[in-house]
Length: 387
Image (cartoon, rainbow, N blue to C red):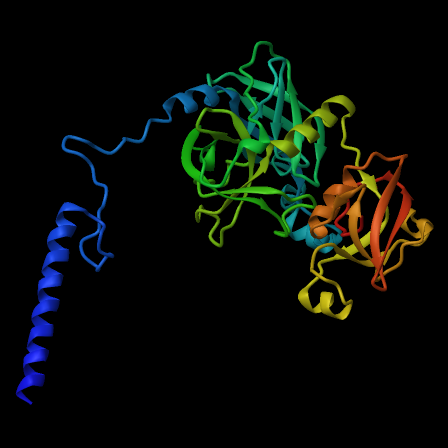
């Protein structure tokens, strides 16, 4: 027993000596021993260092503000005539005083716009000038000009105006593909009619759709304060270049809740150029009605994913019907470009030139097939999901 205890004591002493030797050696050769949960090396500001201060956006605002105008519209409305005016007894007692109700009245609206050319073309929202009899544009320097409507596109909520004035400060367009989530943006407009106002935020999201605001949706979402009167105003980047046109807000009270939407310059430019050239926008159409592919629909059709768009209806005698497309088919590509969902399909088909053939790739009964469709001109605007 005594011998065993002696051996144990000698072993413990040897281990302690070895441990002490290793610790001493690790001080001269750091990293020799594995990390044991001790202090972590961190990077901190050196003595005298300071955080980089956020730069001012005054230069961006100064560059873009002269290109943003206030738009004032008015239209004449006539109150309904009282049916009692046809009653001789009523007129005998009350005379013609109620005829005042039938006199025309003028109601006013206000919004914002963006100067896009030096020779007087101004971009705004369709809903700002819709049904207006008179349109006036107030420049930032206070000059007020009469404007005429060049053309409008209700399906994107864009419209073009023209004023007779030269050397106007046209805004510079940014490249659409450069915008990213998190970029700083400025919203410029005339909220509530208080005068030109600049608010700041970031790009919260890109490609927002399925909002039910317009037919063609591909919105920039921003938390820059956008309020009634900002519609048609500019959304610019930190360099003062136009990245979008403010068009809508998400609000239950009518005021800003930090969710605003702007039409990106990629759409703005296409619509603007067509309206200036032709007075209207021409889009492709094949006569189909589509719906989203949910996981349940994908499972029932034995589809590998939810990408694509399910054809829910085909217009009888339309281009798709003549090409042999049936309800229940799943469209997966248009002209070689993949269909992500019903919104992307809408954009792909509308971009097709009328009068030409387009190749549509679809899946029917788990079999891929390709059909050629003669594209026609999209009918005049109406609230429908047919494409």
